[in-house]
Length: 199
Image (cartoon, rainbow, N blue to C red; front, top):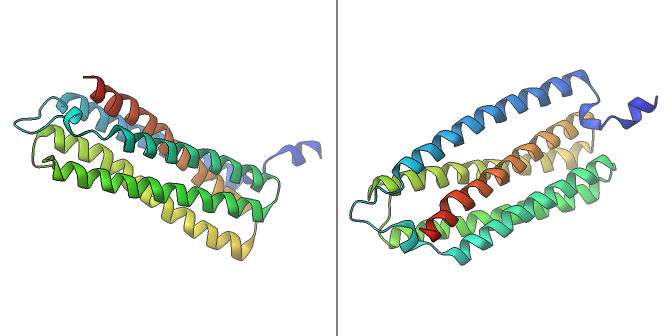
C-alpha cells in the first residue's frame, strides 16, 4: 500500500509508464535534431559574405529578457507539476497559465528579434550565417509555439476532466518537453549569443 501512495499519479499505470518512456526516446531524437542544427551553425557562423555578423546586430538586452522569460516559465511549469501531484487543480491551472504567458512573451520578443535582424540586413538569403542562425532559432521557436498550443489543449482537458491518470500523464510529458526546450535555449544563449557577443 505504501508503494502505491508513493507512486506519482502519472506513473500509476503500466500504459502511462510506457508512454512516458516512449516520450523520453522521442526527446533523444530531438537532441539529435538540435545537435545537427548546432553543428551546422558552428560550421557556417563565420560565413557572413558581405553581410553583418551576429555581433553587429545582436540586441543582448532583449536576449537577456527572452532568457529570463523562458527560464522563469520552466520554474512555473515545475510549480504546476508540483500542484498536480498535490491534487490541487486550481493551483495547477494558475501556474500553467503563468507558464503560457511567459512562453508567449518569449515568442513576442523572439519575433521582434527576427524583425530587427531582417531590418539590419540579415535574412536566410543574405549569407550562410544568416541561414544557419534563422534555421536554429526558428526551429526552437516553432517548438515553443507548438508547446504553447499543446499546453492550451491540455488546459481544456484539465478543466473538463480534472486531474486523472491520463491528464496527469499528458501534463507530465508536456512538462518534460517544456523543460527540454529551456535546456536547448541555454545552449543557444551560451554558444550562439554569448559567444557571438564576445567574438
